[in-house]
Image 1 (tube, one colour):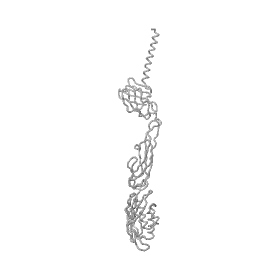
Image 2 (cartoon, helix red, strand yellow; image 1 turned 180 degrees about the vertical axis):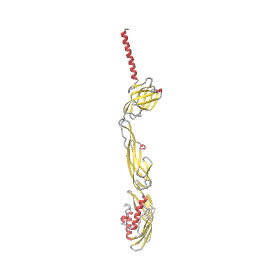
Image 3 (tube, helix red, strand yellow; image 1 turned 60 degrees about the vertical axis):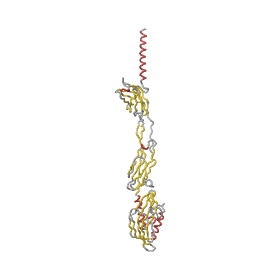
Image 4 (cartoon, one colour; image 1 turned 180 degrees about the horizontal axis):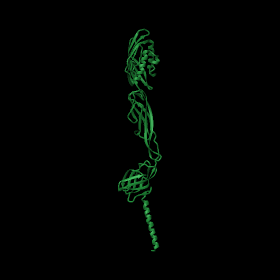
Length: 391
């Protein structure tokens, strides 16, 4: 064989050797990028799945070799992966960290040596969406007494307050319910609480704010925390029921006994829907026309509040009401026709109702005895005492 042919064969052999080495190098790389591995260290050849969202949390399997040499740590895009576990010499599982959109290097470190698969994993931002705010469909405030009006409370009474809430994305038990009121106090949490009314009458506004906290992404696709707030109020009317009925009844009794002002004014606190208003107007007019009340005594009244209850005296027919008042009264009067003094003494019963946000007198029935019965129908009195002198 000539020297020239020997040179050509030698050249051909070198070319073949280079081709074999190049083929081995390409086969060892993952299709996502190139592998950089130190001599004698672990090697990374691929990641499955090779893509996930920027919020992280995707479980991946890293393929390669030399993983069983010792404890392994993994970074993706420079951030440490979590839940790293060496499955075998050729497989590691891990959970991806958060990262901005784009390709990220995957690096495995074992025994002080690190191998990197360039652009081994791809991040893509999920579709950005904002939650709808919670909806407070309504709030009810109701006491525990039978037939008690809604949105009503007596002084220091504890009532139930319940909100009806809906939310499309978040379960109701994950929402934050924030109850507030300028006075009184709340007991409990969530959509149903108890509220104790203050010791002062008046309208009190109860406010509920429902807060929904949720995760979404920013413009870079990274997770951010956001919240929605919805607020609704309800007004509770706080009453001193006994005191309010007492004030009306006391005023009525004083004016009836003083025979002033006019009948229409004296019965101004009787409800228009009660038959007692007309009957009492007639009685006041009749009394003023026939008698001169010379002196009188009004004892402190007793009041019971029982919504939809029945007052105890029934000689005039059963009287139902939301409150019943009882007052002892004595009048000494001169009959205009006979010029004789007559006395009426007994107990007056008054039934009252709660309507349109306030208390009203309804019927008045006098139970007692008279000498030459005086036509009087004095209304029930609640706590208070009035001693009338000669008119």
